[in-house]
Length: 279
Ligand code: 8IG
Image (cartoon, rainbow, N blue to C red; front, side, top):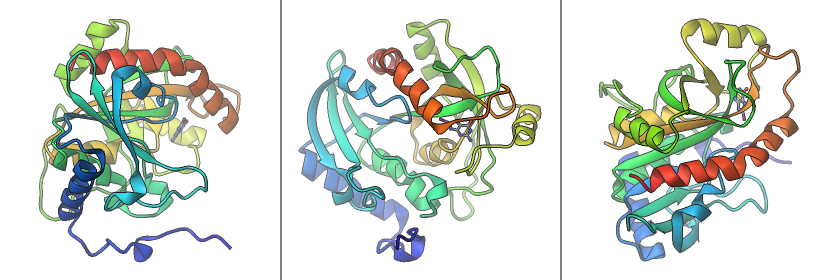
């Protein structure tokens, strides 16, 4: 029988999340041999190829040996952390290979542990990518879209206690300008995070549109909030892999979503690498 892990099974659950992130950063420094990193990248559905285009891989380590990162849920699916020297700038990129989603039920601390670890490892910038559904019918599957703001529809927050963090310009205008300098045709939109793991109903997509969303997905906003609290400057880019439910008359198929990611992979990976090289 398989069971879903919960926060109750987490041996680190009693540790202060920032202390755990500091330990993780020490583990990364020790296991990669790289003392500090500059830019963190989270590569979501479709974006995995970008890492190979950034520069020389200095180290690649399994993430389950780093404090607070969970064992992979699926057998044969090992999450890794990769340290890369960006050829053009000499900056070091920390590629966080396996995202924890809220729908896994491991708790919000696990979802944002990578952000706190990146900050503790010295990063000043994070690039958050994802695959998502699009509300704009002009955005064909395979279209990358810059996130310019978000709606957190998860009814939770990564921030604990009375810390009233400002989220104005959460998705940095400065970094969006850099992205536009690479591709002036990039569209921007508001990303709404649902808890998932089911896709939305057409009525929920319509609601999200009324609220101001252009993109719907299951990640990114909680990470962005935690990244802001940790002092990171944030760039968010979505890959529209499917039209959101009800926007097109065709029902969503997970296989088609994966296919769109694979097809767009080389193009968006090059885009992302070229953006990171200008940071
Ligand atoms: I890929 O249409 C992908 N992820 N919530 N809705 C939500 N998440 C997604 C979707 C989508 N497509």
